[in-house]
Amino acid sequence: MDKVIIFDTTLRDGEQAAGATLNIQEKVEIARQLEKLGVDVIEAGMPVNSRTELEAVAQISKEVRNATICGLARALPADIDRAWEAVKEAEDPRIHVFLSASDIHIMHQLKKNRNEILEMARAGVARAKGYLQNVEFSPMDASRAEPAYIYQMLEAVIDAGATTVNIPDTVGYAMPDEFGSLIEGILKNVSNIDKAIISIHCHNDLGMAVANSLEAIKRGARQAECTINGIGERAGNASLEEIVMSIKTRRDFYNLETGIDTTQIYKTSRLVSDLTGFPVQPNKAIVGGNAFRHESGIHQDGVIKMPITYEIIEPQAVGIPASTLVLGKLSGRHAFRERLAELGYSLTEEEFTQAFAAFKELAEKKKEITDRDIESLLAEEKRTVTEDYRLKRLQVTCGDKGMPTAAVRLITPDERTIEDAALGTGPVDAVYKAINRLVGVPNKLTEFSVKSVTEGIDAIGEVLIRIESDGISYTGRGADTDIIVASARAYINALNRLIAAKRAA
Image 1 (cartoon, rainbow, N blue to C red):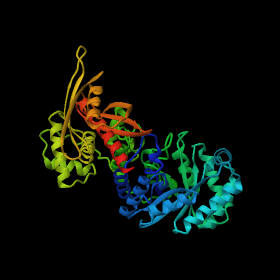
Image 2: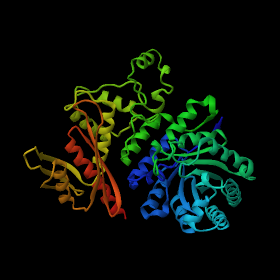
Image 3: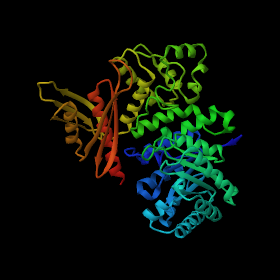
Image 4: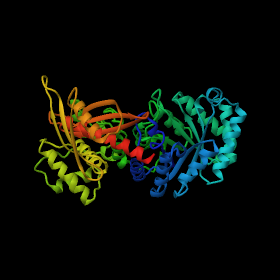
């Protein structure tokens, strides 16, 4: 079978989703998980954007050895030089050069003519080729460009040394048949196309990103650019898990394969969701909370008798256990360790001891601990371990006749204990005011949302907040059976991200 190269751009295009900012540590953690997932290419960022972005791409280049590491650059010398600086220590580095190709972009954004753009594209690829062999080129907004001009541009950049040519549906404008026809046209009309791999990069503005990608693959594209959970600019990118599982499930139709270890899909999805602060919708294909849940009596009967009656994918194939082991306060270390293994977590002894202690504490509050409780608990423990400021104690007084008051005790980065109290319009407002007085970092709260992680009156509540400082948004998440405690943890999580970003700047 032919292989489809999976090019993951979660750390570049995915991070461009409004509010999805990641720090260096988080980007490296996701990159390591993408390596376990088996992606072929990791687009780790656009190094020219900032010193922090360059450092993140460089760190990933050093640590991730089993995937091509790619840096994105405009067709400008400074961008290309910075991209090389970031990826030069990778086992297999790639520079991805892009330049607008549609008249809409050329005339209104770049204010140049077609010949000038053609020369910029050729020169950009040639400069990148001077640094390394693995060069990709993208004619941005290709789906709205004149096909004949795309053919001309691709011929020029392949002659200049491009080994991959990527066809972007930058604004999600194309329909599957016309996008597939564009790929066929490239194969027929670009004389040197045999010297390069055709890639596609689709956005989801009209909900067609995965459909367009699969149609292009069916017509001859052999690299798919995509993101975990489909995150990205505006309505997002083509979803990696949907493309991969479509090819795997319908192997009879596509006669293709990927190198993805699909059992790592669910774990990767949860990690990206946790670190970006973007929840996965319950009805999301492959990784949504309802993807393998059945409520209808007819469906339940069929699944019990033969799962394939209503499940075209085995849940284990994407890393979701087929059944739920219910844990509670009487469960021991062995049962907890077994459940973690089934869920795909591999912890050090120290991490396991901390997680087990948190599990036992939660089990005192809840009769039954579900898989989602455990995932939320582990995410909360990881945030607590890695953050500068940590919540030690919280006490709140409120009521319909009282004055909401919060007393907060924090652990500082140098392990000192600090405490203060404040009044607020409500308990959460009082908590945030007390924390602000202790931490002293100016910011504006722009979003606050609460959801139940699991069912029941004793469910874990998860709080997502976003704060803004100097025009940059920072996301924080916290979880606890006490929603006020969860709110405090989420706020401290966001403040720690803000502090880390300012420290790195």
